[in-house]
Image (cartoon, rainbow, N blue to C red; front, side, top):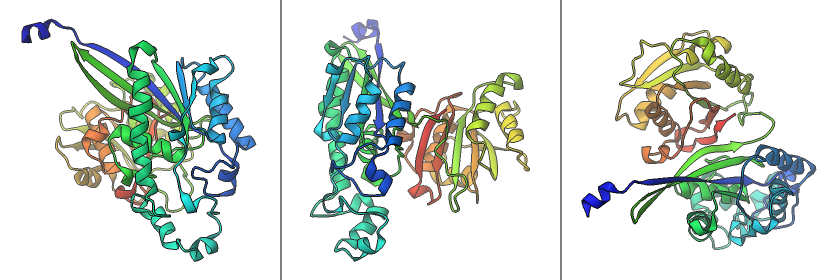
Length: 393
């Protein structure tokens, strides 16, 4: 049997699942907590955002669409799907509705006095600071949501994309901020304590690749996050001029050797995305095995364009470095840091350190050379950091 297995060639297939949050709604605009209520609709800006997403995804050959039944997501899906695609390939799934927030639904976030005087004032504070422990109306909404996200993968997404008879290589899922976070959290293998740490802007586009490896009768499936929160308009999700905000911007370097002219396209793209951001540190980070005598022209070019006063630092990370040691070596600063990772392992270590996640989770996030920037908001410390985007370009 072993000899027979050795003669069998493995077959690898990669499919994609693209998640999109709905465009701005009337309750988003007014600051009202929506939850799974269905009273709000897209604003004019929301319609524009949906059309931008349509343009960004126009070349994607989607075979099927799953969408939330709530008006704001239902309409966004219609716009993105467009007239040219088959409407019979769209399914409405109730489990893709937004998080059920029970008595919180309809509260005005701007009306602090009302919130603080209501019987669930303590619950609101918990909702903001420890959402995985948040309880309202006898429910734990974020825990319930994570369970629903797991159900969506097992009962709707996997059965569609893994059934070869359905011929679905690319699936579009249009839903909401919180439910998309639960879907991504389940894909990455992280729990409800990571709620609010995976940013989903209105009409933000996120792509997960599902790679299936078949060897005889044995199959294995692997999920990888390859794009997070891509929006139209070219504005990276970073609030560069807000007091108290601090970011780590991660770029995966290509191997350009010492040829600056070959790197200039990427250097200019990154500088354009981050033109309004100032950095206190620019680092070239690599694994212990990388030869640092070879100059990283990407780091050199970015340092020049961002007019960095101090020379770019080079940091080598030990093979088994803990998140704490990575934070101490490369991520400590009073301001923003631009990190150029020179190899894949160093890239994963930086991500693990920024988000304080285990390496088996960071291995599922693919920061790709030449594919823009990955931004982590570390304003509240590494235990409460949030990934704003992955491979934003």
